[in-house]
Length: 121
Image (cartoon, rainbow, N blue to C red):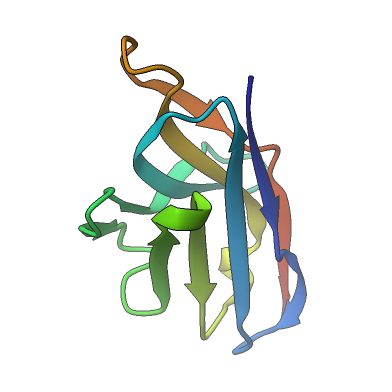
């Protein structure tokens, strides 16, 4: 069993900052790409940012310039620093990770339960 547990969401005013964290635990042998997605009411889930195990990052247009993704491989944790938040950033933010549970297995995708981010105008 693998669990991804997110934390750090909440209510913030326009222009404020939040830092999300997502820790993987359980039967984790190896972690590949980790990332953050978000889903606003009535919209499809979208990629915000992703980071490889050696630190290469990728951002969607929605996160570029304001958000920073990072990871601590020793802690199996990925972070999303969000600055200059706007009301349109309001969404449930989900952590996703590609995880192998055994050296003989490939990687599977795992999702966290989501954390609500609300930006008030």
